[in-house]
Length: 171
Ligand SMILES: [Zn+2]
Image (tube, rainbow, N blue to C red):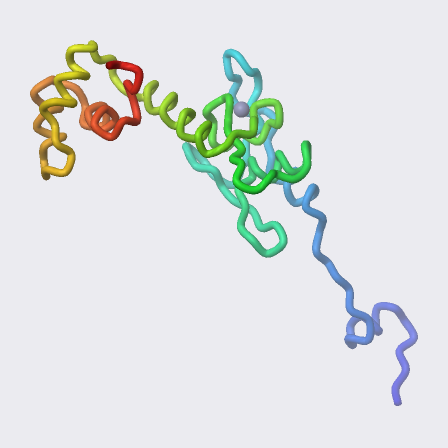
């Protein structure tokens, strides 16, 4: 039987198996740019570089694809309790700055969605909101478009009202 003298030969011939999986923090930080855009209230975002625009990106943790901002939470604050969401204060989906993240439940997630949706929406008067609720039936094809064009607002705004995602406090 042939013997291998060097460590290199042993590895090359499969007598020693070397596990080359690099650690999660190393894989994570290698793709983070701490010179991200500066949020007026919260300061500098640290962005996940493999993606651009309004996307979250992903990386593999224990063979499962995970959102980088969740990994950031994990690395800085530890485990995320089941059912909780990691949300952004800075509204930047690519951001992994732990100071810009907070934990919330499904309810907070929806409120956050509403808050963000609200920002994207145009302003409506109370009368317009009530009018939309009365006159728009989202189950009718084309109705959102019709009402949006009547009021001269975008369809997303009308959609937000009729699905109770925005202007929820207007009664
Ligand atoms: Zn941020």
